[in-house]
Image (cartoon, rainbow, N blue to C red):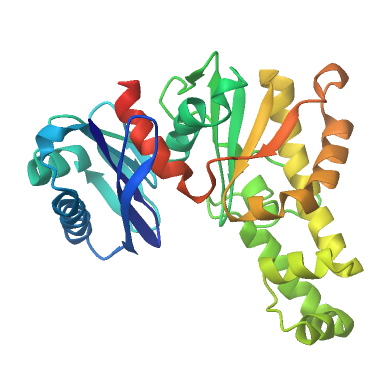
Amino acid sequence: MYIAALDIGGTKTIAAVLDEKGKILAQEKFPSVVAGYETHLSMCAESMRCLMRQMGLTADDFIGMGAALPGIVNNKDGVLIYAPYADWENVPVADILRSELGFLKVQCENDVNACAIGEQRFGVGKNYTDFIWMTVSTGVGGAVVESSKLVRGGYGFAGELGHLKVEYKNPAHCPCGQYGCLEAHGSGTALIRETRKRALDSTEFAKALEKMGLKPDGAGCAALARAGNNDALDIIDQVGTYLGRGISYCINILNTQAVVIGGGVAASLDLLLPSIRTSVQQNAFKRMQNIDIIETPLGYEAALLGAAALVLER
C-alpha cells in the first residue's frame, strides 16, 4: 500500500507518493499559488494525479493522504483556519482533496507539527521519547513531543517557540506584532537583517563579502564565518545566543531529552552550536543543560515525511 503526501509551503509545494517506511517513490515540486486556495489545491490534486498515472496507481492503492499546511490547522476536521502568508481562512482542505482525488482518508496538520510527527516516526524518535522540534528559517516554529506523542495544548496551538521573549533592551519588531520575540532575533530573517546592517556599518565587512562574491544574506554570512571573518562570526554568535535563550526556557519547563533543528538555518548549525551551548549554560537549570541539540536527519523532506506519518499515526 502507498501513502500520498503534500507539503504546502509559502513559496513551494511538494506532492509525493511514499511507502509505509517513509521512502519517497515519486515526487513533484512546483511554486505555491497564494492568490487563491481553490487554484492552488486544484494544482496539488492534478500533480498527485500525474504521479499516480506515472506509477499506474488508483486511489484504492493508497492507505490515505496527508497534508502539511502552513498556518493554524484544525487537524480533526482537516481545515486550514488561517494561513498568514496568503491570507487564506477556513479552507476545507481535507474535503477538497478527498473530493478531487477519491481518497477516503485525508489528514491535515500544521507543517511544524507534521515535522515533529514525522521525526517521531521516521527520524530521531527511535532514540528519544521527549524532544522539541524547532524550525529555524524565515521565522522560528516549534513543536513538542512528550512520551512519543505530540503535545497540542488546550486549544491546539502548543509549541509556539518563536514568540518566546529573548530580548528586552533592544527588541526588534516581530511579524506577530510584538517585540523581542525569538523569531525577530534568532531566525533566518534576523540573520539577513544583521548581515545587511553590518555591511552598511562596516566597509571592511562589505568588502569581504564582495571579495568572495557573496551576497549580504544568511548564506553569505555563514560562508564568511567559515572563512574566519570576525564580523560574520559575531553575527552568528548573536543569533546563536538568542536561539540558546529560547531553547533554555524550553529545557527548564519541559525537561526534554533533545532539541531537533530543521529549516534553512539548520545548515549552519555547526557554526551556531557553540553560542547556543554557551547561552543554554547561562540560562538553563544546571542538571538539565547537557541535552542533545542536533540537526534533523530528515532534511528538506521533513514536512513531507510528516504528512505521510499523519496517515500512519491515525
